Length: 184
Ligand SMILES: CC(C)(COP(=O)(O)OP(=O)(O)OC[C@H]1O[C@@H](n2cnc3c(N)ncnc32)[C@H](O)[C@@H]1OP(=O)(O)O)[C@@H](O)C(=O)NCCC(=O)NCCS
Image (cartoon, rainbow, N blue to C red; front, side, top):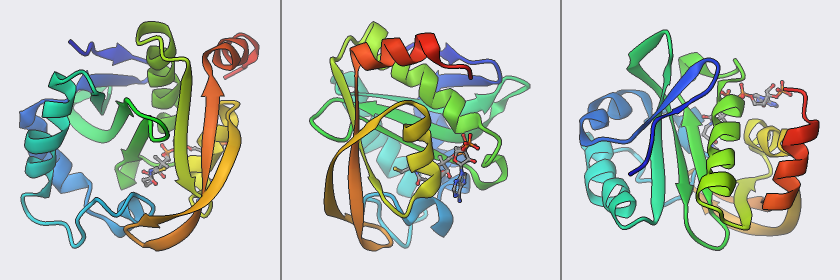
């Protein structure tokens, strides 16, 4: 069972089927999808969120292969504002997007710290790796702030095209040390 996580401003609620409608309303914007993997269909179909939640995300959670949360402000818990995921595997262990009206307030940085703690402290994986397009400056900044390192560069296919990408990594030990020293 994936638990609800809390940060100072956010609730991270485990994904449910009923969330699909709000995700459909928030997610399909070019600014959100252009640096996401080209597995995301584009143009986004009218039932894209339902298909993703029902056929991919919830089954992966049930198999214990992924942990997906919707993000909500504590002050307005019925409104979904973004999405964050942890995923078992070699190089793509975390993914996220924030609805346009809520970007630039430090909220994803907050959510990322909470799920990264969950990855290491609860799920007890030894390493977290995430690929990001080099042009995706906001996403890279989050990895930088978390004390992650670039371990590889490669070209990857995104919704917006084929771009240079970096694989960022942090180990459980580095995360623990970073959390002790960080002033956030
Ligand atoms: C990446 C994303 C989730 C960031 O969400 P957010 O809530 O706006 O992030 P934060 O407010 O926590 O900001 C993260 C950092 O990036 C910086 N940043 C934001 N936009 C930026 C930009 N266009 N260029 C450079 N830095 C930027 C912020 O200033 C902040 O750094 P700081 O704390 O040093 O000031 C959001 O931009 C998004 O949804 N992008 C589309 C989806 C996506 O690309 N997901 C990641 C795929 S790898």
